[in-house]
Length: 274
Ligand SMILES: NC(=O)c1ccc[n+]([C@@H]2O[C@H](COP(=O)([O-])OP(=O)(O)OC[C@H]3O[C@@H](n4cnc5c(N)ncnc54)[C@H](O)[C@@H]3O)[C@@H](O)[C@H]2O)c1
Image (cartoon, rainbow, N blue to C red; front, side, top):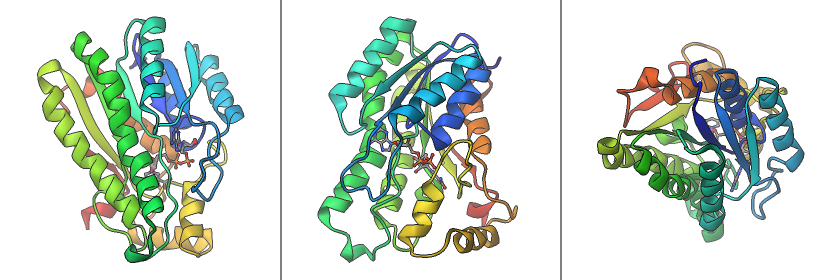
């Protein structure tokens, strides 16, 4: 019970890494506010997490004994995020952890100058500004508490470039920068901020994640071929599992990491060590 007594807000919790973090946090004793857009976004060329997927995540967490609130909100909507943060405070009396996990992998797959302005704006608005907006929404609460842990799910795309993913790579590099700057702002208030950078994560059917397949689709290569390319570039020769990311998130959320802030924690099988 490494998170007993803590309340965590997790964005993008309907499926994938967000769902896996939610269930891992519940198993460790946390109460949860699970947020997802819960519908498709025009301009994102694949289905996003649905209302029923978010409800399923919540049901799994309640089975572990967690008290869970679910809310549909788009991380592009600051007023909606502020309402969720305020509801979390009035329901649980505190917000100890924020996991900024919501993200999109596409529109992608183009050479930099072929990206339209709308595509660029959408990517940065969700993947970078979304994390800042949610931080803005909980910052006041954590400052008043003088404690908190913010975990920003970036990517190895926040550390190195990937061909035909300039928008995603730029947004995720921004998330790493946001994490470092916010860590300095909040250190005097004992609020920690860290970036979590996973490598390519297997689309686990239990979590219903689909980002790896969507990235392969953007690059117009079969998923198996894309996975094989990644296996060759990951020294541990294995794709990252959602549980690997959730395990690191539990540690960053817990007091075991109380001196860890402004860090970039990679969960990438050694990919970025080359
Ligand atoms: N899957 C990978 O290989 C991989 C690798 C590195 C980093 N990541 C990062 O991990 C995070 C989770 O990815 P995943 O693989 O679980 O993807 P996923 O597409 O399976 O899940 C993402 C979730 O975020 C939600 N979401 C998207 N846009 C939103 C918005 N505007 N507002 C609220 N919710 C929104 C979706 O509805 C969905 O439920 C992302 O930030 C992603 O960039 C993924």
